[in-house]
Length: 179
Picture (tube, rainbow, N blue to C red):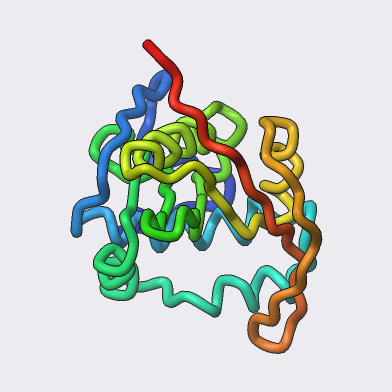
């Protein structure tokens, strides 16, 4: 994804039914993270935000591997991997129980990749003794999280590049399940 430009709507290199693996991010994932972020916002969020809002949103984080590699040092980053490429990722502040970001390649959205990343993040938080998770979710993410049991604490606005974007503060109680 970071070596060649992907046409809008093109999926990364999952040619057959994708086999997704979930793992912690590696430095080599950083370029793919930049692309997943860019396409998830510009294409995936198109029904919820104006073009100007989406352009401001993506301009807040460089489309550059080194910036995303630096973020890996700041946050625990979980990735969804398909054929060795990052096709979705979640950034987490485990000490605060805060999910910082969650993005999935647009053509692979609504296939459970984001939900599975959340399950892995919640398990990490439970293992660290936390009983609550929180996230500031975009309009495209908030509805689905509420349906999955997250509690909506209200709308807030964030400014990016002179544009105001609406998002929702959500939280969820974490419960360890016996297996």
